[in-house]
Image 1 (tube, rainbow, N blue to C red):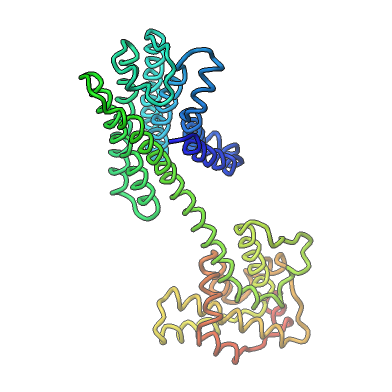
Image 2 (image 1 turned 180 degrees about the horizontal axis):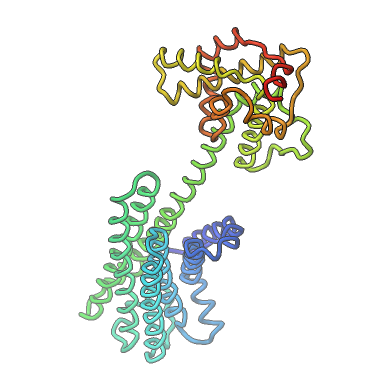
Length: 411
């Protein structure tokens, strides 16, 4: 593998950090967000410092032949620990258990890192080797132990990741399961990587030469495994965000018929603060729901519980479920009230405060006003406005109720 094979994934990891930078800064106190940031950073650093051109540059800058070896091995060990820590924090559970497991893995791999550095310092590796250090120094005291230690630590991490991911995957569904299976497959690449390295090293111990497994095969497995693992962590998060955005915009769109129905009697056109079209979807939905509630409050004098009861009975008779029938009945009462308001020559749009003050005194107010409980009911009502024959019938039979009648009932 040439330098570009290492630098391309390093740049990709850097781009991912830059893309998630604001979210990482805002949520740095969250252990899960910290774990994501550390994982992406370490993955990028592993690829950057494992590239042969970088290895040569680091060795030259420090003046220590092969100093890049313990540096890369320590980064690999830290990356393995970060993967395990991210899985632990992602899975959740009792905070004290999560913290205890996190500390154990971090402590264990910190000890491994220190042992790698000490082994290199005690060993003697004077000749620079950019690609085949593992096999070239396979029989050198202390350097041999350093090589075995980092391979064992990678193998342990790969096995532990697979066990945790498979145990969790059987308990969940959807994108989370898909991400866990991808992570497990990526971590599985650590095992053949270590096996290839071990085979080449053991061959050297026995006077053989299988250096190609270490020099050519193992780096490909490591690169593929790290990238697959990173993709596995990103898939559930990205797909969850896309799904949430889709659901939010879908809610906004489905609220459209009810919002347009109430638009003639709502005062939202005159509000001082307007929501721009590029505002977040959640804010757009909140504003649309607020406009709908304001419009329904202004229609309060024209709500007729008899229209609602008749529409409910008609919807039930047509085969609707009780929840759906309630939504159709509420929508029928709203559309009848809009037309009653339009037919009232002396009517006026009252404020939300006026409607709320007058509401307790009106006949049937508890039944008539119950439909404003939440956005799900609003969505059902909006769909009923467009699709229900019960609501269509109510449009043609809308009664009128004068505002003077309203004042007589509430005075």
